[in-house]
Image (cartoon, rainbow over all chains, first blue to last red; front, side):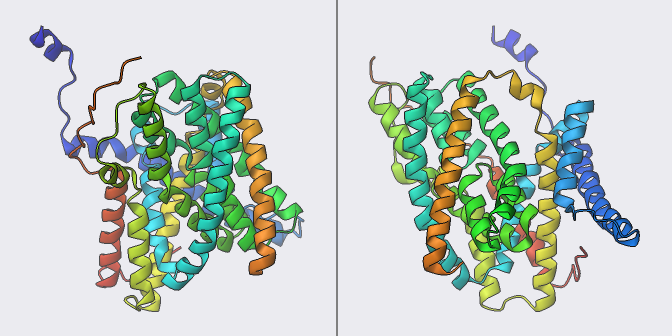
Length: 361
Length: 42
């Protein structure tokens, strides 16, 4: 029997083969991102040269749109899939490098305000999504996954919670599809709403970081508004990510008490396992920048490297958004997510505007 | 429903994506700090 199982298993793959398999997809991410940059530069120059009133479309939007077209019109060939899946790696590396653009004092000051807003957002979102899930008769664990996905940090939170509460594959697929679809919608609607309400870069950045679920989409929604908004969106979203362990731990204990998940052993180990390590990397680089460890040119080089990492991320956001795959997952989780997300977006918008009056942003 | 056994999953000895991202970013930072990469165009 063991021999039969061994025969059906795939042979082990060497590290070099795994690395080589990533290259086509990474090259595609780079090509799309670079094409986005070229389109922004050339179309703007052409429009200016011909005195056209053409809106300035940033490379972020071009990269996402090209990715969306490839994924949804042509389909993504198998050879590219492993490399495209690295977009989250580039996002996290980009956030670490972005630390060079924040002095620790700013992180402390902005992070303190963000932390307060994040705690209010997470509490309100978890309560409202749980209520909605019950009202629509969703399965309890699917409701938990949707609540965590929309309150904390999208897909990563859903995956972390799935393992902790022993949710099944179907529930997590439903929740991930709903959160991804809603993230794609937020990406295009948030900048429009921000401009319509004349939100400052600061207020818009915090709002995006609070209300957009996935870190990649939050960064992209911020970058579509302005560079300053992107910085604030990423800082706020990173604060949200840092709290993932506490929320997942709470749900793990809740489901274990009901006897429907394995019990949690050492809580400190659990929290460390779930804690996003890139937050520590971000703080370390920020600390080094604060104590003057880098020259001005080195700071610029680090900031540019961070931009390149985000460029690959934005290309990946478009490529992994497949409308047909999302439609297969059914309507009800999407409707619950949609209503919840609108409520969270409105709630956090009011929260940011009110806080902005007190803090002057 | 009966209480499930306390079967904490064994931690994966491989480095997580997060940790790899931090290590690669720190390596790139070191290259820039040491002057091996002097300029990153944008």
